[in-house]
Length: 413
Image (tube, rainbow, N blue to C red; front, side, top):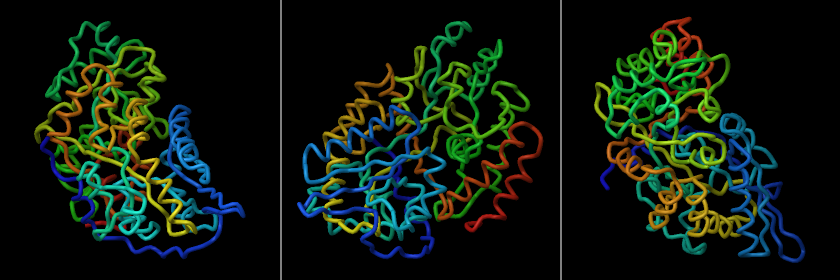
């Protein structure tokens, strides 16, 4: 399968953060009998996601009864806004989730794993090489991946049938998407669920305007002609075409789609677990429609690393090997929580996903681009989300908004 290396994102300049000192604080602890408790922090957006992570935590204790993993979860946006304080504090977790888009921002808070891999029995050759590289900084492995995947359009098959529409096929066009969205908008329900997250610019930017919200060298790119075109088109879905509901507050969790109030939503393979648990309708997946810049979307991925506050990194490495191991990735794939980063386990996601998902995911990977970000991506994303609602709702113009976010960024080009 041919695809561009996700490692391009790792070329961004590292943001220099205060290096957290080693500590014997709350990250882990060993009792007199040699039993160790490891604190593990990761994001979760639903009860089923939390249950999936807890299952992995339990797997560690089952395989090695001397290790107990204590799980802490937070919603996606909260996890990233609180993480700098969390990692700098006395109660920092021993193991923490790390997404490729934020490797550069948090690099100095994670221990390079290269010396730990052999002892823990982790062979990076077992993983997709692109996401392995994307979780490196300065050539050092900071996290072991559990997933990767491109953005796709999840859609309500029942709504398409009720509107008398043929289901979309991979390679469909923006015109076909807009036509379908208009036909699906009726009776208080909408054709598409929009979001005010900066992710939308990387989801749609490659095909609408031909670029993403960041450049390959880690500079914010919101004032490019391509990003302005992408933002104007995206906002038009709400403010002009009326095929997506106006946004009142943060809208990035897919609830409109899962509740049946929007017929299409853009997300990744990691959300299959929530679709299977919450959607009360027949779900299909299809590639993002093709715009003027040709087919393409961003491809992301995540993993887990050992923090610099961990006082028992050798034990944490053993736990890390289990939660990113074959059995764990088989489980995550089967549950639909991850398209496994371990290549031999990727078939588990295909087997459990909705019909047609394998062909769509493989097609999206063929034209996918590495998810590009800045070393200040969390703050850039927060600045974007705070002002994007007024643009999407037609209350302010895209150009001025994008210029404002760009000028306030510490990673402006």
